[in-house]
Amino acid sequence: MQIEIEELAKEFGASRALHPVSLSIPSGALIALLGPSGSGKTTLLRILGGLEFPSSGRVRFDGQDATDLTVQQRRAGFVFQHYALFKHMTVFENIAYGLRARKRAHRPPEGEIGRRVNHLLDMIQLPDIGARYPSQLSGGQRQRVALARALAIEPRMLLLDEPFGALDAKVRKELRQNLRHIHDSTGLTTIFVTHDQEEAMELADFVVVMSMGRIEQVGRPADIRAKPASDFVRQFIM
Ligand SMILES: Nc1ncnc2c1ncn2[C@@H]1O[C@H](COP(=O)(O)OP(=O)(O)OP(=O)(O)O)[C@@H](O)[C@H]1O
Ligand SMILES: [Mg+2]
Image (cartoon, rainbow, N blue to C red):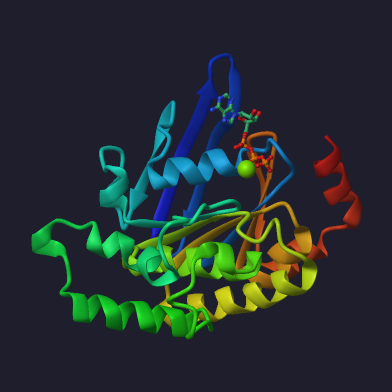
């Protein structure tokens, strides 16, 4: 799905989280939103997903104005840093949840749900953990399951807010590769929030550098890298 962000701004009371920002995201792209704490990354992501309303401006999905779309109609798959899985449900039940919660007319039969969940467990490279509970998983495994759960609803886009932020470097790298692989095989438009420059450079097709509620740079990782390091430092210190 192609996403068009037009002059989108957000104020919380007297403070501006987003100055008017505009950005065109091609269908199927993997975008990293990179920037320091408080630069507006989460705010932008939440507006796209319908969890937050903009103060002005608009978003278009495949050319259509998304202003009046509900969270459900936007069909975004979310993964957050601390995306609590349901503790009392197994991994299988967690992943199946979004499908089973659908109204009867849209709910796939149980056999189909089972096939889908097993396919997703394969995609996250954890085929054998369906019967486990979240407390029996490592942090990295939990985030993989959160990713599978986000994919289960057949989203039109994936919105990921520092999903690997709490994990150690080795696990982060593995999950990054897994996400890249899933992205390439599903072709889902994916927006990945991070404040880790290396992670953004390694993972994304395009990097969007944010600072103080503004978009400072947009480019392929190589273009961003080509900027002198001092530019980066300046942006991040300001
Ligand atoms: N619900 C809210 N009420 C008031 N201010 C808010 C709210 N959400 C965000 N803000 C403010 O908006 C600005 C941008 O916040 P946002 O959470 O988008 O930043 P971020 O780039 O995601 O930061 P981090 O890397 O720390 O998650 C900050 O100044 C923040 O304090
Ligand atoms: Mg944030």
